[in-house]
Length: 368
Image (cartoon, rainbow, N blue to C red; front, side):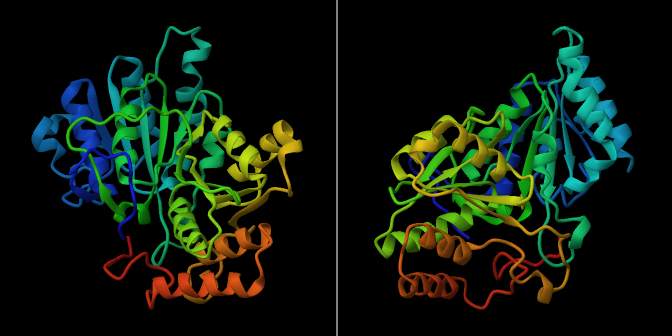
């Protein structure tokens, strides 16, 4: 699926986000010989869904370190290598694999700089992929950004667009702090124009991807793409809304969000993860505390319901927020009539066509 990406250079080639991540990692590794790659499958021909394809042939296979299936040890070794002067990039095929190494991540990676009074740095990148769709189920499809964002000492990013993904993974590799990069598997397939060569995108917070004055939508990762689909159809109906792609979960830069809400008076957050105790809850709380007088209505949050992710197509229907639900919620918040909301919904559903509910596009072959 093609998505807009306004930041690319003129005449930039159109590639998917997975390839953009690969190109960003390769550029970073070429520029800095201390960059090394750890993981399970980093030397595999599948190359972690293509995101590490042929990197070893360019920088040397000795920098592509295949590790046993023992995530606690794997990440512990990577943390030690980072403290010793390397810049490790750890790639995990699912977020859940990192749960076996939470003690290493939350205590050692996140805290070493602080407890050593600045003596030790941990320039570590932890790539984790969020699964979705058939073959995933409750244990391979969790978006757990709230866990990592809760811990001081970690940076957490969730790129949604290819150009951003390339520049942000480069910035993550160059950062002297541990950075958790959460990549949505379905976002890997989205395409847009991406600048060739070295690209650096500061990890500085949200980016406005649609402008409007009726409502502010703050979304994360793949939900940003759903929000864009909703916004485009709402704009056609005469109701432009503003979308901020959050991009950086921690540190959380609220200023652009508050500035947008000051113009629109309404806030809708759309989480990739669970609604309860999620990122949207934090944003809604902070915006309300800072700008209560600017709000014309209470903030509304969309996210996953409060139960594990189902596997079957029958049960998964309605589990994930989508463009139609975002458009309906936004329309209700703006006081649009039911007939107009329903018309927008029907156009969004027609846009998707007959694609099964648990795949992103017809060309998706899955399950992984």
